[in-house]
Length: 64
Image (tube, rainbow, N blue to C red; front, side, top):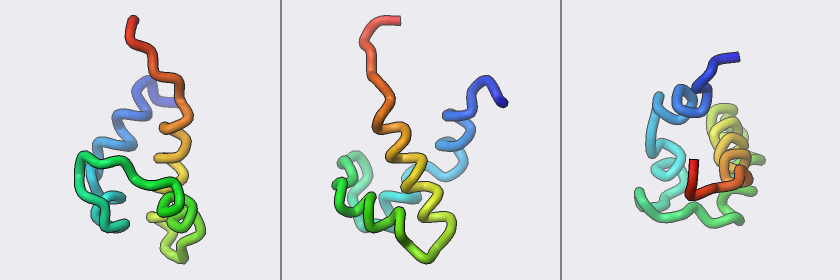
């Protein structure tokens, strides 16, 4: 497994999921749109929505 897999996964196409779902860049994607995208027929949108939901669940800490 790559050491910085998150940066590699997100860095390829930043903002693509926002564009596909019609959400302005910089705004949070609503939960209902993420759920709908997870059940999309498009395989890449499903994977990106799943990754977004996974990253959303990570704990954010201010100190490191």
